[in-house]
Amino acid sequence: MQENKIFGINGPVVTVLGRTDLSMSEMVYVGEKGLIGEVIRLDKDKAVIQVYEETSGLRPGEPVKSTGQPMSVTLGPGILDNIFDGIENPLEAIAGTAGAFIPKGVRPAPLDEEKLWDVTVTAKAGDTLSAGDVYATCPETQVITHKIMVPPDVSGKVIEAKPDGKYKVNDTVLVIETDSGEKKKLTLCHKWPIRTPRPILERKLPTKPLITGQRSIDTLFPIAKGGAAAVPGGFGAGKTVVQHQLAKWCDADIIIYIGCGERGNEMTQVLNEFKEIIDPQTGKPLTNRTTLIANTSNMPVAAREASIYTGVTIAEYYRDMGYHTAMMADSTSRWAEALREISGRLEEMPADEGFPAYLPSRLSEFYERAGYAENLNGTEGSVSIVGAVSPQGADFSEPVTQNTKRFIRCFWALDKSLAYARHYPAINWNDSYSEYISDLSTWYTENVGEDFAACRNEVCTILAEEKNLMEIVKLIGSDVLPDDQKLIIETARVIRVGFLQQNALIDIDTYVTLSKQLKMMQTILLLHHLAKELVTKQIPLSKITATGVFDKLIQMKNNIPNDRLEMFDDYTQQIKAALATVEA
Image (cartoon, one colour):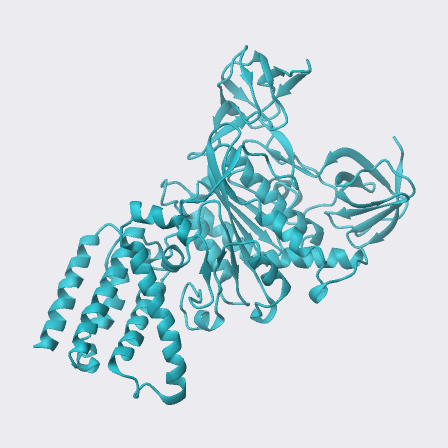
């Protein structure tokens, strides 16, 4: 094999001169310590390598070793209830031996190679297996059964199958003879390139919502299972808090949470919170169905670029088992900044605000890996992606936000003024949108209520009318408005404070079922319609508001549990009784 030597070092970018045996996107080991890198540019007499570890101390003349394989992750049991860095180094295992900081050149096995798994082998000798077929299972955690599948590039006839028992991840449990006569040994794990989407049988239209328990999301701006959403907002607007809530409460089977370039204390908070939270779906710790990928701002910048590909590859792997996975990327702006830094070191021509010209294509490659799919083995699964965006100065016209909007169908625009007013979630209902509403309308009608869509549309109309009226109020005051327009402003206040605003610290309000969300809308709109009838009879709105019924509705979110929806009947009776006294 030809020996390649380092010629130049520019931060995480290493140059090798002369004709090489390297190939594009190949993983290589750089220097005496064998730092992990990836070939990102090839000329006839030069190769450029992106190194995913700290390059301080690296010197020209040190060797670069070829692996002949693309940058890949190891997929198998042991991924869940674990924490990795951007290139799948197991951080807890490293911390146990090397302390708080990752030593350079260390390459521990991503999955525990000594742990014994209780494996049930479902295939037997003589079976013909195709790509994606399940040939063994094992309980990965208390709540998730791991299905070991034939790798997508393998198929053939089983010539040897081990009995049920305890096996390590690298133990052979099956031997397959391919059509070409090659014998393949299958273990509990396999590798897959992070930049190559895992194949599926068919991409399906997303028609089921990803239920989050957050009213402003589930009702006004829903995301489908298999959908892609963005959460943009300035510093302090609550992007991380929103993603934490989604990770805790959404009804996905598997959660992949990526801290991409975020502050270390935020990832510490995630670790501590997730370990303490009891999963409402299973009654077990939330970590039983969660994987964390931590690539904090003080870690090598190139690994930040790889982290979201590592995360989405893991999400696709569990999708192939028939699970619904949700991936939270916090934040894609830090990922884009890593692209910009590496692009600058490569002396590429910059585009808007210094970002590389290929930023849109990289964003599309990432978000297009979301989807609802029929897998190779006939099961159905999904990958939902929620990416946080951190525009500087909360400027949504900057390149990352604008290009992200091209590839997502759900946009939750966070408003710093709402966040400072302690309105959680601080999703601005005027700037946000969801294109999944029409796709999900049938599901809402069949599973929640026939009037769910009508109630949602009326709520949105009232909020839009309030926005227009507030422009007039700012100019000439509210006293000149007729009572029917004042009623719209008063009802919109109840919707904003009593419906859209949630308290994540109150158990009764932190997660709200869709049935309760519908009942809350029906009750608010009932008051609006009855009050509107009185206003048309020339009864002053001031007399109606004096009953206190509007303020009473604001408090119903904290008084009615998810399993006591009959209590809404009491509110209906109180509304009718209070308005009857006004009419009398």
